[in-house]
Image (cartoon, rainbow over all chains, first blue to last red; front, side, top):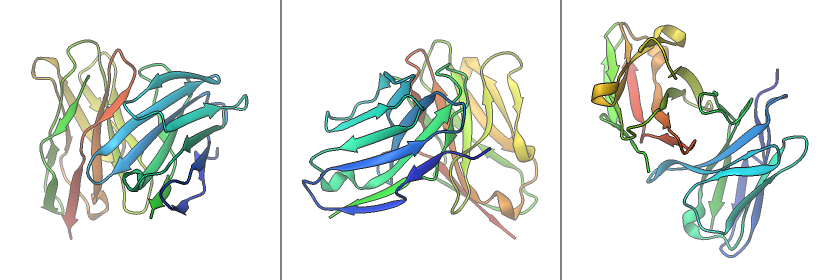
Length: 114
Length: 112
């Protein structure tokens, strides 16, 4: 079974631009979560989608948004990029949104904001 | 909001030494606990998890963790490490808010 895939793997943008990251979950998984990983803040939860609905949201500004499609693929959008948005963005999928469900992580998208 | 703290930032060991990584969580209600590992150049993968039952949980590659509710702890152990255990280890918790909260991570370096 193929794992979680994320595209693109690397991205360079400038301040003020917007960016869209994509995540394809493991086949059959209906929940997708997004995380931001930085050296200073570590791994922080952004949001979770299940069956095209946002189920949960972390403490990030409204510039960070996402959506999930009927095939469970998910996209994350960051508008008006700031230097501090430079990070590794990780996507994780799970069978359901149950608390004990294991989340399987993708390789991440490395975003650099200049 | 729940939080997870990992006691050690960087641990350096020799092969065959025993490993114990500390993890404490703040949430007082029902909680699910996880240990993830990130090997160099690879993505995060699950080592083990606890959600109920036996507080001693066994995972992959000889790792185990013990859930001690009274101490809010979920320490990871391995009796004898190998060079291939060099990685970053993350403890995580998921409480009633269903958000997965990670600790800062512990870098483990195993010297041959």
